[in-house]
Image 1 (cartoon, rainbow, N blue to C red):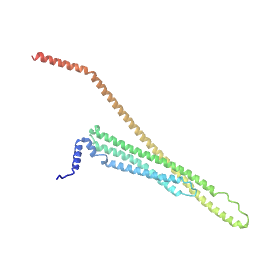
Image 2 (image 1 turned 90 degrees about the vertical axis):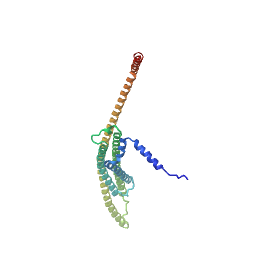
Image 3 (image 1 turned 120 degrees about the vertical axis):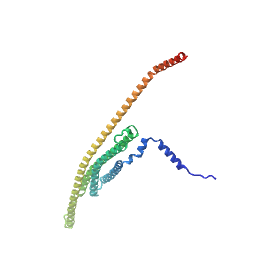
Image 4 (image 1 turned 45 degrees about the vertical axis):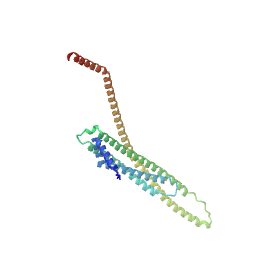
Length: 307
């Protein structure tokens, strides 16, 4: 009776050992001390993830604010909710603006930490292998993450500014329409004594309505002033975002210039190699003649001298 036994795990272990034995030492060092082994890199990744989630939360608040701005009801007063959302978004954008600078500092520390981990001081052997390429790739990845998050933050600030301007126009339109509805001309009343009480009651109602309207208009005016002040503050933040994005664009342009220089150097080296190959090809006939003369002298030496 033949007893079957599953030895797949042994085969997998054999393959993994062979793969590790064939792997270059530099690559193994990169794997063992990889990108995620550095605490600074982990801190940068966590902070970038949290930064992205905060931008998404602020975008949801802005969408809610835009929905309130699009409501056309005259008597549906959402001033308190609009003011609360405006303050939340404004404070969140200010905090994100500071966090963007912190993110840039964390990126710098992460890059320096990787360089110190992969390339110890005084050791330049990794500059010509996979370690150097890995470091450049990681640095470009970090730059891309920071640039993308800054661009998202700038777009969010511009969206908030547009929403506030729309909300300001909506508040003014609603106030004008409410004024039209509440200050319409009163119908003429009869002068008879039968309708004097009704006319007096209507006058009292108009006085109360005028008091409420005055209070309502005051609230609306305060809300409009608050929104305009928020628009001005967001405009200043947006100018800072624009400056930061422009700085990132300059960094990208410098990287493109460095890449172009590297490509130009590679092409120059290729041209030198081709010219060297051409020189070798032109000297091939001379080399054959030299070997032919040597062969002739050896043959002559073997025929006459050896005898």
